[in-house]
Length: 122
Ligand SMILES: [Zn+2]
Image (cartoon, rainbow, N blue to C red; front, side, top):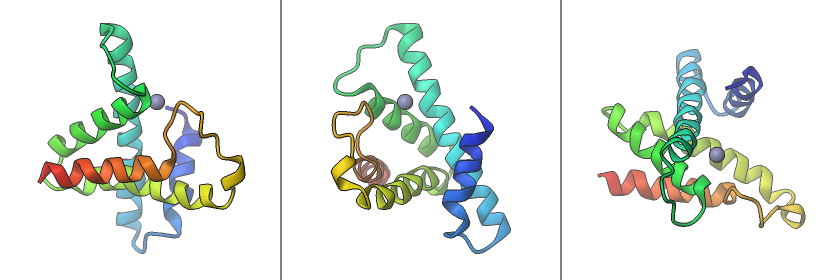
């Protein structure tokens, strides 16, 4: 994971978070979400795991499920979900140029898919 990605998370959350502690937790948790997303890609490749649908969606689900099982509450995975929400707001500004064909689902789809898994976890 590159430092620019973590800088990006810091930028994403700097307007949303009020305390330094919450800010650090959000950036760390969003980084963990991405770490487990990338680990999911590695496991799919290493073990030739069969995927139904988009691999990107499958590894988002993998990251969400892992974080839901690691943390005693849902806060750890919420940062990954809120990152998608912030990105979705940016996407709304350029609807005409959104890459609907892209390997990742739209950020708003990723937000609601993650929210659905969190809700279903309860
Ligand atoms: Zn990916």
